[in-house]
Length: 288
Length: 337
Image (cartoon, rainbow over all chains, first blue to last red; front, side, top):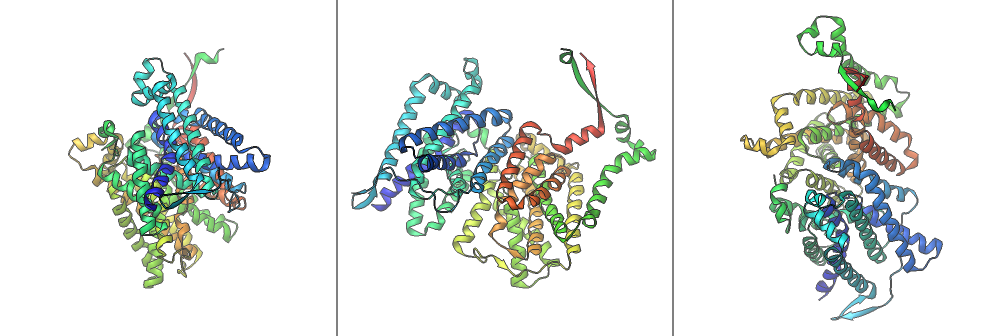
C-alpha cells in the first residue's frame, strides 16, 4: 500500500517536472536545457517574496509565475530564436543559460539548508493505513488540475489549437497564418510557468538547493525520452513507469539508486526504441 | 543612405591561391605564408613555460593543455562526426580513475599508467557509449551529459574507488618541466594529427557521417563502426588528459566528473572556432587563465563563461579562429551594388 500511494505521488511529481520540458520540445522543437534552473529559480523567487517582502503565499506564487514566464519569453526572444534549428547550438545555448542561472544563484548565497518554502497546509490523513500529508495530496490534485487544464487549453482554445498545429507540422501551420515565432514564445512562457509551478509545488517537500536544478533536468529528460520526446501522453505514462520504478528501488535497494534508475531507463529506451514509447510518427526520422 | 547600396566582397589573396599548389615551394615568401602560422603555434606553445612568471602560472599552462585536449576531442566529435558530447568530464573521470588505480594499487610509474589509462580508458568509454552511438543530435548530447553525473553518483552510493574521499597518494611527475612538456607536446601532436586525419579517407567518411548518415549507410558502410572509431579517438584524448591531471594533482576524486570539464571545453570550442581543431586550443588559452584570475569569485566564473558562451554562440558563432583564417586568406572591399 505504501508503494502504491507513494509511487503515485512520486509519479505525479515526475510528471509535473517533465511537463514543461515536454511541452516546449513538442511545440517548438527546442530542447530547453534551462528547465531545471527555472524550477529552482521559481523556488527562490517565491522564497524571496515570502520572507523578505512578506507577501502572502498566494500572491507570491502568482507573481513568481509571471516572472518566470517572462524570463522564458526573454530567453526565447533574445537567445534561442537566433539559434533555432541548429540542434547543437540550441542545446549549448540553453544549457549555458541554465548553468548561468544556477551557478549565479549559488554565488548569490542561495546554498545550504536554510531555504525552505512552507507547505501549503499542515497535517496529514491516513489513506489505507498510510499517513499522507496534506501538501502531497494538494500536489497530486493541483498536478491533475494542470493536466486537465492543459488538455482543455490545447483542445478548445484558439491559441492552444495553434500550438498543437505547430507541434504537428510547422510549415503547414505557417501557411495557415499561424505565427510560428509567436507560438514558440507562447510555448516557452507556458513551459517556464510549468517549470516554476513544479518548483513551487515540489520544493516545499525539501530544501531549496541549487543541485535540484540539475536533478530535475535529468529527471525531466528521462521522462520525456522514455515517453517519446514531444509526446505529452507518453510523458505522463513514462512518469508513472519511472516513478514506480524509483519507489521500488528505494524500498528494496536504497535511495542512492534513484538517479541510476532514471539513467538506465533512458539508456534502455534509447537502445530498444529510440523514439520512446509513444513517439511513433517520428520513428523513421529519429532512428539512424 | 548610401550604405544600403554597398556590400562587402571577399576575395582570396593571390598568395593564398598560389600556395595551394606545388608553387608553394617556389619562393620563401610563399613558404613562409604557409608555415608561419603553424610555426607561431608550435614555437609559441613550446616557449610558453619559459615566459610564465612563476610556478603557479606554469601550472596554469598545464591545465590549459589538459582542457585543450578535451576541447580538441569535443571539436573533432562535434564538427567532423556530428556527435555532440556534453560529457567531457566522463572521459576525464575514466582516464583519471584508471591512472590513479594503476598507480596506487599496482604501483606502476606515471610513464606506464598514462598510456595504459589512455588506451584502456578510451576502450571503456567507447564500450559504455556504444549503445548510444545510433543516436544523434539532441539524444546523444543528453545521454553523454548524464554519464559523468551518474558515474559520480554510483561511486558515491557504492562507496567504491575511495568513495567521496577519492584516491590519494598518486605519484607526481618527475618535475614540473616534464609535466608541462608532456601536456604541451601531446596537444601539438593531437592538433596536427587530427588536422591530417580529417583530410584522409577516414576523415572523409567521418564528415559524411555528419552530413548524411543515411547516404553513408547506403554506400554499404557501417556507421556505428565509424562513430565508435571517432569516439575512441576523442575519448583517448580525454582519458590522457584525465590521467595527466591525476598525476598533477596527485589525487583522484569525484570532482573529476565536475561540470568544469564539460563546460569549459565547449566554451573554448565555441570561442576559438569550431571545426578548426586549433580553435579550441586558442579558446582554452584565453578562457582558462581568465578562469584562474577569477578563481576568488567562486562559482561566479561559471556564470561568466556561460554568458560568454551564450554571447559567442548567438552573435559570433564562427569563433576567433575562423575569423582569423578568413582575414589571413582573404581581403574585403566594399563594392557598389
